[in-house]
Image (cartoon, rainbow, N blue to C red):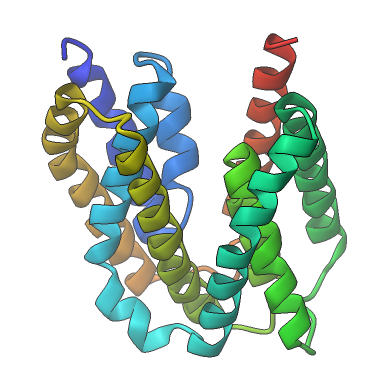
Length: 243
């Protein structure tokens, strides 16, 4: 509890990024909170904050999201979760995480190389993206970059990209919170921290949403590519530290 004052600017900044882009809160907040809290506490705090604040974005997201894309990638993610759990039994978690981090870096390089989004889209591409995200989430807690890669390379405009990602992450975070609730990893300290940090997080989200409505970006690549690299590098660091 004594560290709460240091967590406020972290969640505030992460909230601004989330409100502006529709993603990024979990990556920034988890890395920041892990400086002061154990991951067993920081992860449920971040998921709960992001989920609650996403509810405030859902009305606008429903208006602008590509619902067909959302349904397919969300359904694919649900299918991918048990596949990821099976892989955990077949492959050591450490090596699985390293493989997924390498895959994320490959996606970053492909996004850098690809000057323009593809004009053709397909059901199979959306479904594969959702499955890959579900596998990454359940096996190594790394599922967001797969969705980012698809969305940023899709023919959707930035408003539809942001809205679709918001809806997808609401679903994935809800599932993760249910899993944490079943495993009973939360504590009273986690609940108190969420209550204290909710206001600065929501203020940050509203500020980010305000700037998006005032001046939406032409592309989210300038935000997403650094975040994807950070996810991969942090994953590598965690994996190598466990060797």
